[in-house]
Image (cartoon, rainbow, N blue to C red):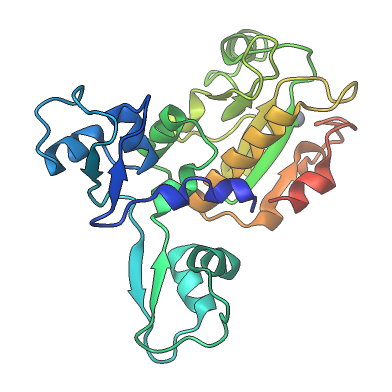
Length: 281
Ligand SMILES: [Zn+2]
């Protein structure tokens, strides 16, 4: 759970919040900041045109779909139970609510629960997050497995073709996601393979049984020679945290190819910082 997760939260609007237009602001930019749509702000303020906002103008921000939920504490509630019920950790709720004394909740006290989509998406590019959100996730994904490509460069298209033509995999690319290293794809760029939108089993492990429940993520690079880039690690963490929430996968089930495979493999290479990375989730 990194600090990254909370980047968007302070901007989440609550009803009645106001914003004074600054130099360089666009309605789209303001909307993004508050996790609402530009049209919602336009309607809420009776703006004739989204282009016509002026510096110093006060805009009322409508509550967005990602606005926090107000949970009223019931007799017998614990913060841990409230957190669990909404898919958060106790620590996340303590931080979010700035609670000094999380052990003594009062009945009737209001606990703010972050709007989950906003939190889930933090750290992922908006377009990718939207695409991920659109996918109807099937049940049964219980593990996430990290790989490297073992090549200095790579991109989804070439890897997909290779898996189809040379490895005779009819569903193409065996991984569900690929993260670029600046050679063939942008550094840290996350690409979705064709299997994820169709929710197909992976083709990244030697065991068909494991491929049924394991989401495969491949980082481009040969980590036997050099470590992944910081951006790759950042993207990997954001993607994994999203998938963990979305598919309810526990951190103990995030692993590497070498640790789970039934046949010996060195993947994802000796320079992949397995222990440090898994601890950072
Ligand atoms: Zn591998």
